[in-house]
Length: 172
Image (cartoon, rainbow, N blue to C red; front, side, top):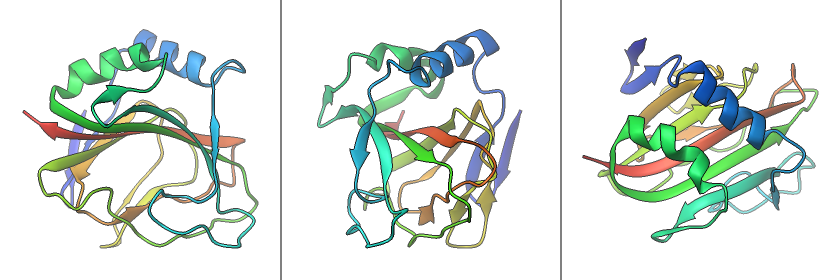
């Protein structure tokens, strides 16, 4: 089901259940490689906050697949039909006992780039936009918007972790 809210295109039940479960099972297994990122976004300086970190997995950047797990994304890439990929990165945020807010950011300073977020988990940590719009973190949901649209992730309080895949691409 597709919904448009304040320039957000929200698609629930984005992938068939078996394709979604396959991606989720592999990425949330104890064999999937996650890497520490000391700061919530690549272009903001890390703060002294004890919660300003996350785990990342870089699938694609600079015109190249960067992961042995890139193949997992085939069902999503078939669904979004990108003309060109810019970057694909997964984020894993652990539980914290309070909602934290970080500065809003834009993924790229280029109006031709679309940002897409594919949620692997359902949590109480929405993606918040500078205009006040929130997109709830619901598993198998894909939300897309212009990469110039300022947004931020939030930390969760009701599950062990929040996991999503961030796509930056140029549409057909």
